Length: 209
Image (cartoon, rainbow, N blue to C red):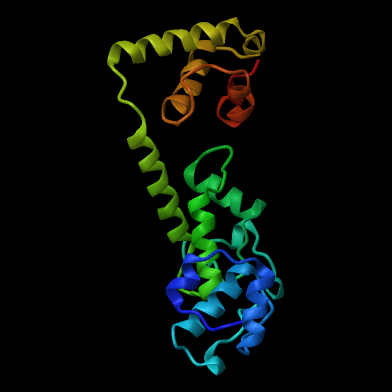
């Protein structure tokens, strides 16, 4: 295998076994994820001496954090932080939503931090990345005229009252308003769906008969 330049390497797709072969040829670490192998080769082609390119530490050696352990200042590398149930609950609590899903941008930030062994990236950076993505998504949403918003709300209420499952709640209009607020400020369609009763059950539980 001949030596290539950094630009060519970054512009070419390689399978993991190809990266392992490169690392073995140049005396680089051969264990790790594909992202880590990419980082080893990139460092080498950038001119960093082989003896200064160290294997990334394995996360499995650090116990996973519980939701109570996670703070805004928690490092996402070498701290035990994972994209798991505990982290999902932390973000749900932070954003005051019943359910939270990690975004591709958050996952990309974590992968980059792990590959570069960047100890300065924290949970706060993940939150900022998430907020930036939500803002961009909102900017892509078409502006809704007041008349259309009223029309959407009326249709939402009409569908809500037609659903037999909503009869288990008192003050049904208030329950509908709570669900509407969640839908209105989300990128999803401005329609009532029975699944909303499950998704936001913690917000409307007190109205159950």
